[in-house]
Image (tube, rainbow, N blue to C red):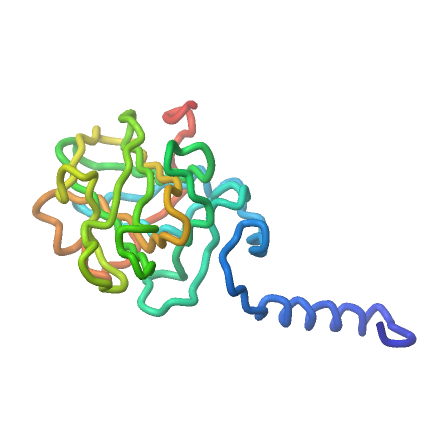
Length: 224
């Protein structure tokens, strides 16, 4: 600490140290050593994504999540959309107990909707660190994996529940929810898309921006 550290110099010194600390390399991604994210505002959990004529695009890093050392927002690997991506810090292969994140949607028309996830997995063995948990509406939690385990393609769409690579569900008009949780550590989620069958091109075009994201839904729709 410098001599005669005034309130002004102390403020500047601490701000500079915070910048330097933020630039420290982390050779391993271990929940016990990773820095915590800044506190997420609680009201983000009550926002919902708007259906844009049969296409809903949701950036994974947009929603609030608990600081339970399950996810971290990063922007280190180029090619992501939005402001960054979520990187899983927790491995929970048996069942999703922590790190639950909700993506709430206002769907304009009921019917069959498809969904997909833009992601990447970088383990040298592509059959490892390649999955996550997902729950659609009132359905059960299911394990989903990258549909591509043959070669590393970087950021890509295509997930499977081990039965089909074309996953769909029935959404009612109004409030609907998709929830995710980590299963494999180091798995990365960039964006989640839900779409009607004739809107696949819009949903999977990375130039399509995140749709309207507003605090318009009533949390009572999703009483736990």
